[in-house]
Length: 288
Ligand SMILES: [Zn+2]
Ligand SMILES: [Zn+2]
Image 1 (cartoon, rainbow, N blue to C red):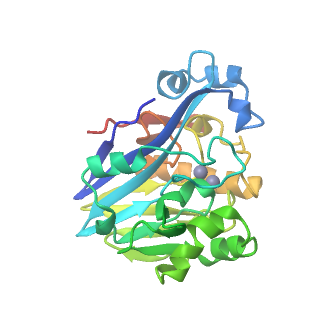
Image 2 (cartoon, rainbow, N blue to C red):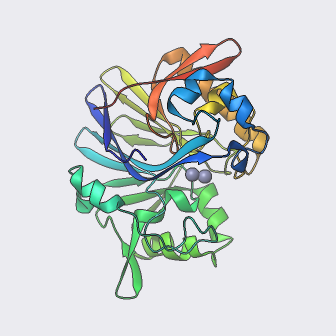
C-alpha cells in the first residue's frame, strides 16, 4: 500500500495527497459491473501503475489539500475513524490518517475551507471526530461547503448514520455553507458541476500563475475509466449522466493539459489525460 504523502505544484499552489487507505488486488467487477480483468489487462499503462498483472485493480481513499494565496483548503476528507457504515471495510475503522495529516505539516485548526465533491460517506468522514460521547468538528476554523442538491439528498435520509455523525454536527456548529455548483471559492478555486455519480456532484478547478489542475472527485473512480469511459461504478446514481460528464471532462482535460487527480486514484494519482484514439490514457506525473 502506498501511503506516503505526495505533493504536486501548480503555479504557486501546492496540492498534497494524504492517504487514508489503499487496497490492491480488487476484482474490477466488484466496483464496475461491466468490467473484466481481461479488459483491464488489455491496457498496459493501467497494469504499470494501477492494477496487478492479473488485471485486479488498486483503489485509494485520500484527501487532497490545496495551499494557495494564503488559503488552506481540504477536499474530500475520507471515511474517518469510528464511523458507522453498512460496509464492513468502512465500519468502525481506526486509520492513521490524522497522524499522516499532521506529519505532512498540517494542523486541523489551519484548514479554512472544506470542499466536498459530494456527500458519500468516504468524502465527509474526517469533518467530525468523537469527543465525550458526541461528534465534534475536526476543523473548527473551516467553512464546510455543500451544494444544495447534495444537502437536500442527505437531509431526506437524515436517519442515515453518515448524516448524523459527519454532517449534522457541522450544521449545528454553524460551520456549514450552501454554495452553488459553479461557485467561485476565491484563491483560484472554482467548482464545476459534474452530476451523475450523485445529483449535486461537483469537481474543482485550481488555477495559479497560468497553470491549472482539475480535482475530479468521483466522476471516475479508477484510471482505467480513461480507457473504458462507459464503465459505470456501482455507486453512480445516474450512470448515463455520469458517463456524459466523465467524457466531457476527460476531453476538456486532454485538450487543456491540466494536472488531473481523482479521489480514488491510487499509487500515482495525479497526471495528464491524453487522447488515445477515441478513448484516453492517463500519464502519471511524479509528485515530490
Ligand atoms: Zn462517491
Ligand atoms: Zn468516493
